[in-house]
Length: 233
Image (tube, rainbow, N blue to C red):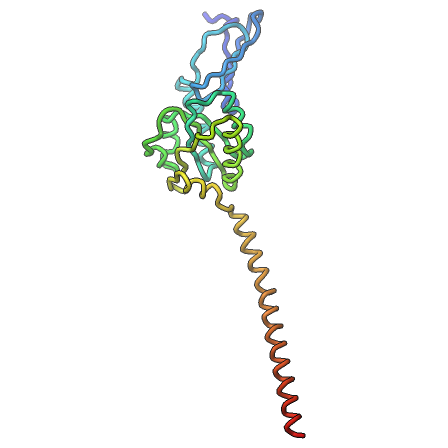
Protein backbone atom coordinates (compact mmCIF):
# COMPACT_ATOMS: atom_id res chain seq x y z
CA UNK A 1 0.00 0.00 0.00
CA UNK A 2 1.39 3.41 -0.99
CA UNK A 3 1.40 6.08 1.72
CA UNK A 4 0.33 9.52 0.51
CA UNK A 5 2.89 11.26 2.68
CA UNK A 6 5.62 9.44 0.75
CA UNK A 7 4.18 10.13 -2.69
CA UNK A 8 6.96 11.07 -5.04
CA UNK A 9 6.53 13.37 -7.99
CA UNK A 10 9.36 13.47 -10.47
CA UNK A 11 9.76 16.26 -12.96
CA UNK A 12 12.41 16.64 -15.65
CA UNK A 13 12.65 20.29 -16.61
CA UNK A 14 15.58 21.45 -18.72
CA UNK A 15 17.86 18.80 -17.32
CA UNK A 16 16.95 19.49 -13.67
CA UNK A 17 15.46 16.55 -11.80
CA UNK A 18 13.08 17.63 -9.03
CA UNK A 19 11.83 15.21 -6.38
CA UNK A 20 8.78 16.65 -4.57
CA UNK A 21 7.47 14.86 -1.51
CA UNK A 22 3.92 15.53 -0.40
CA UNK A 23 2.71 15.23 3.17
CA UNK A 24 4.65 16.21 6.26
CA UNK A 25 6.76 19.30 5.55
CA UNK A 26 7.60 20.18 9.13
CA UNK A 27 11.24 19.41 8.52
CA UNK A 28 11.36 21.98 5.71
CA UNK A 29 12.93 21.75 2.30
CA UNK A 30 16.48 20.93 1.47
CA UNK A 31 18.42 21.07 -1.75
CA UNK A 32 21.02 18.56 -2.82
CA UNK A 33 23.23 18.90 -5.87
CA UNK A 34 25.73 16.26 -6.84
CA UNK A 35 28.61 16.57 -9.28
CA UNK A 36 28.63 12.85 -9.98
CA UNK A 37 25.50 12.89 -12.15
CA UNK A 38 24.50 14.76 -15.26
CA UNK A 39 21.60 16.52 -13.54
CA UNK A 40 21.10 18.86 -10.67
CA UNK A 41 18.87 17.35 -7.99
CA UNK A 42 16.59 19.43 -5.82
CA UNK A 43 14.84 17.67 -2.93
CA UNK A 44 11.87 19.30 -1.24
CA UNK A 45 9.81 18.26 1.78
CA UNK A 46 10.68 15.59 4.35
CA UNK A 47 13.98 13.77 4.42
CA UNK A 48 13.48 11.25 1.62
CA UNK A 49 15.75 8.50 0.45
CA UNK A 50 17.28 9.23 -2.98
CA UNK A 51 15.51 7.27 -5.67
CA UNK A 52 18.41 7.35 -8.15
CA UNK A 53 16.16 8.53 -11.00
CA UNK A 54 19.08 9.89 -13.04
CA UNK A 55 20.70 6.45 -13.09
CA UNK A 56 17.46 4.57 -13.72
CA UNK A 57 16.38 3.45 -17.18
CA UNK A 58 13.80 6.25 -17.37
CA UNK A 59 16.36 8.81 -16.26
CA UNK A 60 18.96 7.65 -18.78
CA UNK A 61 16.35 7.70 -21.55
CA UNK A 62 15.44 11.29 -20.69
CA UNK A 63 19.10 12.38 -20.73
CA UNK A 64 19.69 10.52 -24.00
CA UNK A 65 16.75 12.18 -25.75
CA UNK A 66 17.74 15.61 -24.49
CA UNK A 67 21.31 15.06 -25.70
CA UNK A 68 20.11 14.02 -29.17
CA UNK A 69 18.17 17.26 -29.47
CA UNK A 70 21.29 19.24 -28.55
CA UNK A 71 23.34 17.29 -31.11
CA UNK A 72 20.82 18.04 -33.87
CA UNK A 73 21.15 21.79 -33.28
CA UNK A 74 24.97 21.83 -33.00
CA UNK A 75 27.62 22.73 -35.55
CA UNK A 76 30.51 22.06 -33.15
CA UNK A 77 30.70 19.83 -30.05
CA UNK A 78 33.61 20.31 -27.65
CA UNK A 79 34.64 17.87 -24.91
CA UNK A 80 36.11 19.33 -21.71
CA UNK A 81 37.26 17.44 -18.58
CA UNK A 82 35.73 18.57 -15.31
CA UNK A 83 37.07 16.16 -12.68
CA UNK A 84 38.19 18.97 -10.38
CA UNK A 85 35.31 21.33 -11.13
CA UNK A 86 32.62 22.01 -8.53
CA UNK A 87 28.89 22.21 -9.23
CA UNK A 88 28.93 25.94 -8.43
CA UNK A 89 31.71 26.53 -10.97
CA UNK A 90 29.79 24.59 -13.64
CA UNK A 91 26.70 26.69 -12.95
CA UNK A 92 28.82 29.81 -13.31
CA UNK A 93 30.19 28.52 -16.62
CA UNK A 94 26.72 27.74 -18.01
CA UNK A 95 25.48 31.23 -17.16
CA UNK A 96 28.48 32.87 -18.86
CA UNK A 97 28.05 31.07 -22.20
CA UNK A 98 26.16 32.56 -25.17
CA UNK A 99 22.43 31.87 -25.15
CA UNK A 100 22.63 29.37 -28.02
CA UNK A 101 25.45 27.28 -26.52
CA UNK A 102 24.51 24.56 -24.05
CA UNK A 103 26.95 22.97 -21.58
CA UNK A 104 25.84 19.53 -20.43
CA UNK A 105 27.44 16.83 -18.29
CA UNK A 106 26.69 13.53 -20.02
CA UNK A 107 28.05 10.10 -19.16
CA UNK A 108 30.50 8.92 -21.81
CA UNK A 109 28.52 5.71 -22.41
CA UNK A 110 25.33 7.70 -23.12
CA UNK A 111 27.20 10.17 -25.30
CA UNK A 112 28.51 7.32 -27.46
CA UNK A 113 24.95 6.14 -28.02
CA UNK A 114 23.63 9.64 -28.69
CA UNK A 115 26.16 10.44 -31.44
CA UNK A 116 25.66 7.18 -33.31
CA UNK A 117 24.83 7.73 -37.01
CA UNK A 118 25.43 11.49 -36.74
CA UNK A 119 28.17 13.81 -37.99
CA UNK A 120 29.65 13.58 -34.49
CA UNK A 121 29.93 9.79 -34.34
CA UNK A 122 33.75 10.00 -34.18
CA UNK A 123 33.41 11.22 -30.59
CA UNK A 124 32.87 7.58 -29.60
CA UNK A 125 36.22 6.61 -31.16
CA UNK A 126 38.37 9.02 -29.13
CA UNK A 127 40.68 7.28 -26.67
CA UNK A 128 40.60 10.21 -24.22
CA UNK A 129 36.81 10.06 -23.85
CA UNK A 130 37.32 8.93 -20.27
CA UNK A 131 36.41 10.03 -16.75
CA UNK A 132 33.95 12.91 -16.28
CA UNK A 133 33.40 15.37 -19.11
CA UNK A 134 31.24 18.36 -19.83
CA UNK A 135 30.21 18.86 -23.44
CA UNK A 136 29.67 22.18 -25.20
CA UNK A 137 26.91 21.95 -27.81
CA UNK A 138 27.64 24.95 -30.02
CA UNK A 139 25.29 26.07 -32.82
CA UNK A 140 26.46 27.86 -35.95
CA UNK A 141 28.04 31.25 -35.31
CA UNK A 142 28.53 30.77 -31.55
CA UNK A 143 32.04 29.26 -31.56
CA UNK A 144 33.96 32.50 -31.10
CA UNK A 145 31.84 33.94 -28.23
CA UNK A 146 31.70 30.51 -26.57
CA UNK A 147 35.48 30.18 -26.43
CA UNK A 148 35.80 33.79 -25.29
CA UNK A 149 33.41 33.09 -22.39
CA UNK A 150 35.22 29.84 -21.57
CA UNK A 151 38.59 31.62 -21.34
CA UNK A 152 37.13 34.33 -19.11
CA UNK A 153 35.63 31.64 -16.84
CA UNK A 154 38.99 29.81 -16.61
CA UNK A 155 40.67 33.01 -15.49
CA UNK A 156 37.96 33.79 -12.93
CA UNK A 157 38.02 30.28 -11.44
CA UNK A 158 41.82 29.96 -11.59
CA UNK A 159 41.68 27.04 -14.04
CA UNK A 160 44.13 28.38 -16.60
CA UNK A 161 45.51 24.90 -17.32
CA UNK A 162 42.09 23.43 -18.14
CA UNK A 163 41.90 22.82 -21.88
CA UNK A 164 39.36 21.09 -24.16
CA UNK A 165 40.22 17.51 -25.06
CA UNK A 166 38.88 17.76 -28.61
CA UNK A 167 36.09 19.15 -30.75
CA UNK A 168 34.15 17.74 -33.69
CA UNK A 169 32.87 19.74 -36.67
CA UNK A 170 31.48 18.21 -39.86
CA UNK A 171 32.89 14.82 -38.88
CA UNK A 172 36.45 16.11 -38.42
CA UNK A 173 38.26 15.87 -35.07
CA UNK A 174 40.11 19.04 -34.01
CA UNK A 175 42.55 19.48 -31.14
CA UNK A 176 44.73 22.26 -29.78
CA UNK A 177 45.33 25.12 -32.19
CA UNK A 178 43.22 23.43 -34.85
CA UNK A 179 40.22 23.52 -32.52
CA UNK A 180 40.93 27.16 -31.67
CA UNK A 181 41.04 28.04 -35.37
CA UNK A 182 37.77 26.21 -36.09
CA UNK A 183 36.03 28.00 -33.22
CA UNK A 184 37.08 31.35 -34.66
CA UNK A 185 35.95 30.68 -38.22
CA UNK A 186 33.67 33.40 -39.64
CA UNK A 187 30.01 32.53 -39.89
CA UNK A 188 28.18 32.17 -43.21
CA UNK A 189 26.58 35.56 -42.64
CA UNK A 190 29.98 37.17 -42.07
CA UNK A 191 31.32 35.55 -45.27
CA UNK A 192 28.32 36.70 -47.30
CA UNK A 193 28.73 40.22 -45.93
CA UNK A 194 32.42 40.31 -46.89
CA UNK A 195 31.66 38.99 -50.39
CA UNK A 196 28.91 41.58 -50.84
CA UNK A 197 31.25 44.34 -49.72
CA UNK A 198 33.90 43.09 -52.17
CA UNK A 199 31.43 43.03 -55.06
CA UNK A 200 30.22 46.52 -54.18
CA UNK A 201 33.79 47.81 -54.20
CA UNK A 202 34.55 46.44 -57.72
CA UNK A 203 32.46 48.96 -59.76
CA UNK A 204 34.00 51.81 -57.78
CA UNK A 205 37.52 50.62 -58.53
CA UNK A 206 36.66 50.02 -62.20
CA UNK A 207 35.13 53.49 -62.46
CA UNK A 208 38.23 55.08 -61.01
CA UNK A 209 40.38 53.11 -63.44
CA UNK A 210 38.30 54.24 -66.44
CA UNK A 211 38.44 57.84 -65.30
CA UNK A 212 42.21 57.61 -64.92
CA UNK A 213 42.60 56.15 -68.45
CA UNK A 214 40.24 58.77 -69.87
CA UNK A 215 42.23 61.58 -68.28
CA UNK A 216 45.50 60.19 -69.61
CA UNK A 217 44.07 59.84 -73.13
CA UNK A 218 42.69 63.36 -72.94
CA UNK A 219 46.07 64.77 -72.02
CA UNK A 220 47.76 62.72 -74.77
CA UNK A 221 45.35 63.94 -77.47
CA UNK A 222 45.73 67.48 -76.20
CA UNK A 223 49.50 67.27 -76.47
CA UNK A 224 49.24 65.76 -80.00
CA UNK A 225 46.90 68.51 -81.12
CA UNK A 226 49.27 71.19 -79.87
CA UNK A 227 52.21 69.57 -81.63
CA UNK A 228 50.32 69.39 -84.98
CA UNK A 229 49.34 73.04 -84.66
CA UNK A 230 52.96 74.05 -84.06
CA UNK A 231 54.11 72.12 -87.17
CA UNK A 232 51.48 73.74 -89.38
CA UNK A 233 52.66 77.17 -88.35
